[in-house]
Amino acid sequence: MTRLRPRAVALFGAALIVGVALAGCGPRRPAATSAAPYPVYAASQTPDPSGAADSGSGEPGDPSSASPASLTSPATPDPAASELDQINQLINDINNSIQDSSNGGGE
Amino acid sequence: MFWRFGRGVLAAVAATAVLAGAGTVVYSAQPNPVAGGPAGAGLCSGQASTARAAATVSDLRAFGDCEIGRRITTAVSASKGLASSDAATLSGYIAASKSGLTRLKATLDAETRLPAVRADILRIVAGYRVYVLVGPQVRLTIAADSELALKPHFDQLAAALAGRISAAQARGKDIATAQAALDAMNAAVAAATALAAPVRAQLLSLSAAKYNTGGAAPVIRNARTALIQARSDFRSAAQDGRNVLAALK
Image (cartoon, rainbow over all chains, first blue to last red; front, side, top):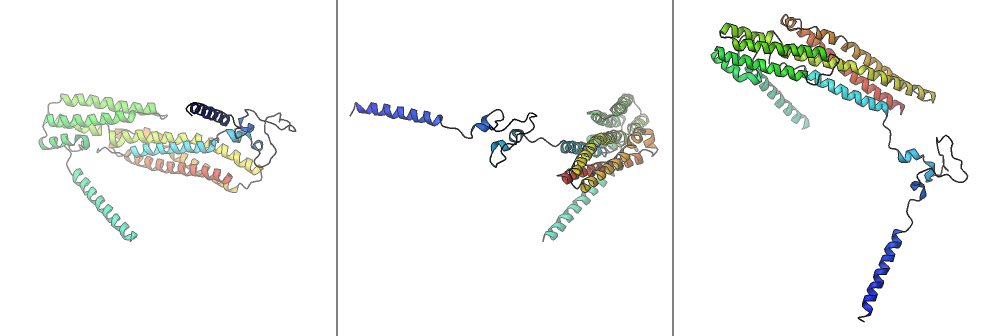
């Protein structure tokens, strides 16, 4: 009895290590499409030489049907809207100048 | 209930305003230590009270020194961050006020007779008009320059928006609303620019001497009114620009 106990503990420990190792090596999600650093084409597809677009299969849920830019790039701010924001800021600064001009200082 | 509460609040605000107004009247009813000279407001009120009570050479000199000091501080403060296209001219006006007041202080400090001290104190106001002329002249000229500097921004925006409208029209989209908003934007910018453009020259032509003869105060008043209207027009123009973007979505 006393001889079996260390062996049981060693077996349990080895099983635990193997289990953890197997769990770490399991398949990962999502699959290859998002991990690939370059567009992946189906065998029947020919890459667009201009690089303009990759239409993919067009099926819902097909990762290749969305353009790579829309998946990875942040939304670009609208230059016209940015210009308007800048204009509004300048108008607010003008407000301050006009308000400062009406201080008589008790003269 | 809400209306009754609102009326109660309004009555309280009105009563406060009346009391505040009464306080101002009482304060401004105090005679100036030297008739026609500075009022002794704020920072110099203590020296003004002493000078009013005693009116000795030293009391009036202390009062005059204080009034000169606060004007120099105001002038220096006005020159900070001056970046408009008229910055050099405005800096020249401010520097002239500052150096003139510094010389006046030296003159005042050397006076030994009451009539001479009184004459110097009168010159603090009439010779420089720091608060009612130089300050508004600087701030309003900056405002006018800043408003005129908006024009290139709107021109660039108008070109971009016109391009988008053309592109939308080519795609068969109804562009009537967007085009109307763009026209309104351009009209508002033109109106604002016309209001702001003459203000700068009108303000820069003013002087303390002109203020003393009554010719400057109406110019400053009209300049302020024109710039406020121009700012409002520019704000409308910006909203019109946003309306163009919304109509093209």
